Every structure is written in C-alpha cells, then in structure tokens.
Amino acid sequence: MGYIDKPMQEGGMLITGCPRSGTRAVAAFFEERGVELGHEQAGEKGTIDWRHAYTEFDEENPAFIIQMTLVRDPISTVRSLTELLMDCDRKVDTWGYITELSKVGGWDKKLEELNWIGAAADWWTTVYERLYDLPVLKLEQIPNIKDVGRSARVDRNLDVETLLEDYDDFWRVARMYGYYRVENDDYLG
Image (cartoon, rainbow, N blue to C red; front, side):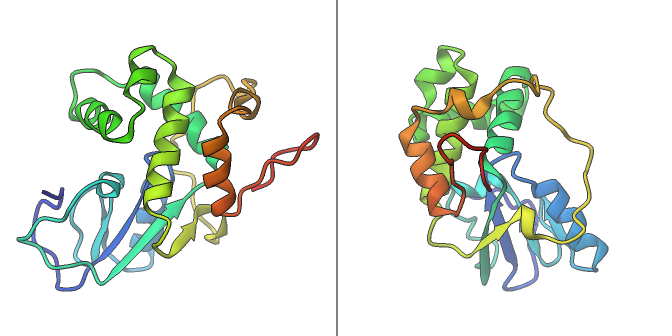
C-alpha cells in the first residue's frame, strides 16, 4: 500500500529518493512556480515523498505518469541521514518506517549496533540501486534552490568520506549516478 493520503489529479508526478535528499526544498521550488507537489503528502499534481522508494502504490489513486529519482550529493545525504538516525524520536511514525525499511534493505544489523553512518550509507545505497532505472533529478542541478533550514548537526569536521572508504557498494552506486571519489583528492559530485 502506498502513502498517498488523498486522491490526486489523474496522472500525477512522483519524485522519490532517499530521505534528506532535498525533497522538502524541491517541493518548495515547484510550489513557488505554481506546481503543487505535496511534500510527503498528496498535492494536486503529485507528491515528493521518500517513502515511495520501497512501496507499491495505493490502488485508489491514479498511476503516476512521471516518476523521477531525486539524488543529492551522497556524502551530504549520508551526513544528514546519520543525524536522522541518531536523533529520531523512537516513538514517531518516521522511526517505524526506518526500522521497517532497515529489514527490507538489509541494514538493520548496523542500525541495531548503532553504526549510524554505516546504516545511513547502506540506506542510501539500497534506495538508489533500486531506483536506478527512473529519470534522475540531481539537487545540485536545480537552479536557485532554496535552503529550507534543515542542515545536519553531525559534526561538520567528521570525515564521512574516509569513514565510507571501504563501503564498495556505496561507491559503486554513487558512480552510477555520476558521483566519484578521487584518490588523493577531494570528493567530486
């Protein structure tokens, strides 16, 4: 069952991806241009919702005629996802989705071990490997995208890239989307 909470206009748009990939900012971007795409809820023209990365759609709603994958720089996304995993209130719905998906995605052991960065990297990898066949919208390529005030509180001096050095699957999927790690150089998005 999908997460759409009310019927939409026939042939809506779905933009999905990993949590903290910029869905809130992209919803605001479209809203400013008169296209109502709800953020984690139904809008008149569709929805932008990370939860659809794993679900089948609710039969009460029309099929999405446009489906896209929203991708943000993987290092920034993992840093922000790490914060979500560390700080999420275990009593809210979001934590229920996280633990459910961790079993589907196979990163539940890292989550149980409180390996937040490893769990975040595995989550990112699982989502984007699954969504690879959809058209891609890179957050970094959207002009004049506004900061919606959500920034990771995880120590900005934490070298996430180095911590992910041995996560071969993460880097393989990052390369699929055009994000590369350059040896002895800075990360290139």
